[in-house]
Image (cartoon, rainbow, N blue to C red; front, side, top):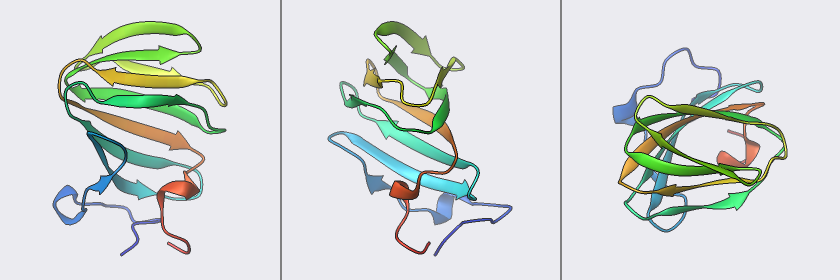
Amino acid sequence: MTRKGLAFAFDRDIAWEAAGEGIRRKVLTYNSGVMMVRVAFEAGAIGTAHSHPHVQCSLVEQGVFDVTIDGRTERLRQGDSFLVPPNAVHGAVAIEAGVLLDVFTPMRDDFVAAGA
C-alpha cells in the first residue's frame, strides 16, 4: 500500500526493507516534494559513499555515526543532525547500532515501487 500524500503513516504498519549489508529502511510518508525515511544500522554497518540530486536532512534518532560529507567527517550522536546538499558525496558508518531519520526533497523515486 502506498503512503504517498497521506497525512499520517503508522510505523507499526510499515515493513522494513533491506538497504545494504546491516542496513534496513522504512519509507514513511511522502509526496512529490518531500520524503521521510527511517534507516536502521547494525553496529559497524557502512552506508557506502554516494551522491544524489536531492537535498537530504538527517537526524540521529539513536546510536553513534561517523558521517562524511564532501570529505569532511564528524562523529554524530543522538539528537545531532546533518544536511547534505544536492550531488554532494556522503556516507555514514555506524559506530554503534543506530537509527537515522532522513528527509529528502524532492522525494526519492528510487525508494518506492513504480506507480506507488
